[in-house]
Image (cartoon, rainbow, N blue to C red; front, top):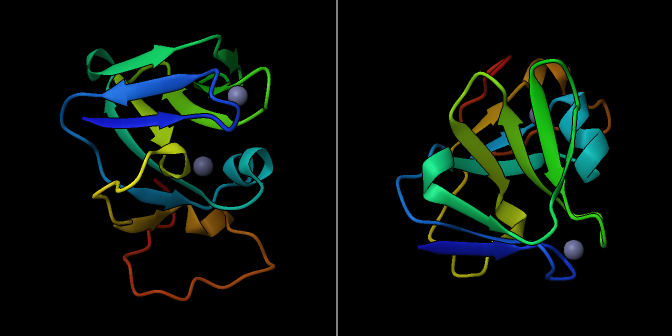
Length: 125
Ligand SMILES: [Zn+2]
Ligand SMILES: [Zn+2]
């Protein structure tokens, strides 16, 4: 089981189940909300339990983004037409046992940095 929480601790989550890939997303929405690249993994909605007063922001017609209303930590991303919930790797208690596996949405990456590791990159998701 892996556990995580926001900066102030009001919103927490735990995952008991199979994890999706650990990806660094370079899209402009993730960069705007997180401050830079957003690193996340995912789990089936039925395998993740969220506690506390999480707020959801309707970021687009296809997805919503969950954050803590007290400290502002950006913790979750959920597409309306998928059963998976993505969660922030930076919010996890350590040791996470997780390693980043890939970069996604690199076509939308910022112009202020380079990707300097050898992980696979995809233009979109
Ligand atoms: Zn918080
Ligand atoms: Zn993104």
